[in-house]
Length: 191
Image (cartoon, rainbow, N blue to C red):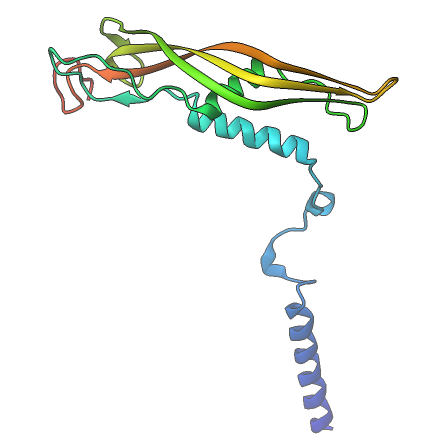
């Protein structure tokens, strides 16, 4: 009789360990989330929009804070806009419409970008919250995008329109701050 009870106890312990190891029942995992525990599929369209928004915020929407400009030094802007930044600005200003395969499609091919600096100047020092005393450095660029635009219409009469000399002009501003008085506790520093 003792042997039967002991084997029954071992059997129950082994069963409890086996069920707990499957992942179905795990009291250490926390409360059951019910319907919210089921994964919800997200469309790639919305996922791409969120990734693009994060990319633009990380790369192009922040204002860098640079060190102090030495007296008598030449004021020179940072790098001109990248090709990616120009094409994203062009897509915002003049998006490609359509995109219905076999009905209506539009493409920009053979893209060439010309960037010209049209202004480069610095504002007088002033107080910026979370930064302190700083000067705002402006750099304005005129970016001309030359491309071949192909429009393919598939209904009611299939035809293709090719504009080989299409161009668009995009103006991009690059602004950044220069600390006044240095970050080491000089004049104008709040730290």
